[in-house]
Image (cartoon, rainbow, N blue to C red; front, side, top):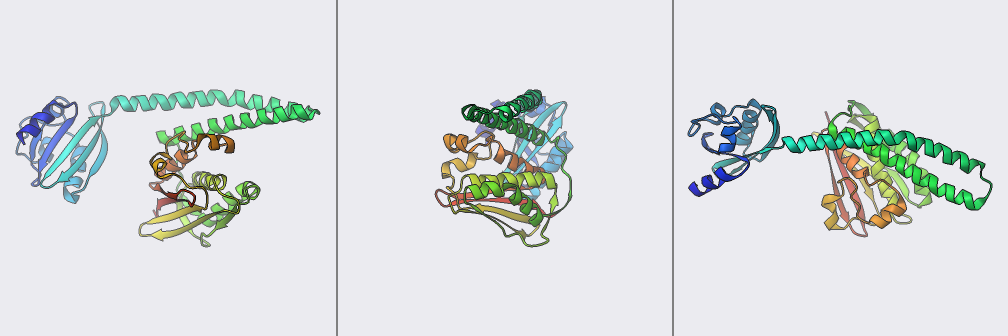
Length: 328
């Protein structure tokens, strides 16, 4: 233990050790200098020594439930992440200062949002000009070039829109409405929108959600979530393939599955597919269109509803994306 304490005294993060009785056995200088921990703490209950009520509450849960606990909190104009885990009779608590990281994230989001806003107007003007030229052009060879230019402009417009949506979702600025949503009806509207694309690729769309199945959430955001999932299911499917949506209640949550019979996702890519701009096969993605932000948007919409998303996939066999949403 003495060697462990000596090591933890030298690291650039805060460490707190609590025994099974809830008494503090060690706290390093990081915690004392940041005034997160009071002097003369050894042998005293943690709730008498810690100077932050959020931390006390988080530790109470970790100790009573004896499971890993993560929480964020502010203290004296700094932002921290706390990670507590119990092993045998000892609870180890790590404190990381994330103030600079949070500032960087805010700056990045603001930069992306500002650039995206500035790009919207010139893109709209260019699209309008190209559409006018296309309609007035009689020569087929020039119409082909204008058609390609219009497609690229539309790709840029979708990228800007997706960036704006994702930035708002990440920052928590996007307000989430709470209302009863008829999931079967929502899926039908998604299918209606994507039906031409599905017919072109000879993919059938199957809505297996039962009549009157309700979820609690924001219609527009959930529509965007399932549009992205079904759109991917169509794009990366095989001829005569299928995309099916089904839902069921499971305990205190709703479990919604979007399953396709497509090309699948290699196992090594699965941990990264919800990251922005990540592409399993960049060349194929470019040919099929898309911004590389769809699944990241899906993840953040699920999180903003208090839920999550998981994926199971086998190469050549298809993929199943499962969205978990709380009933209330």
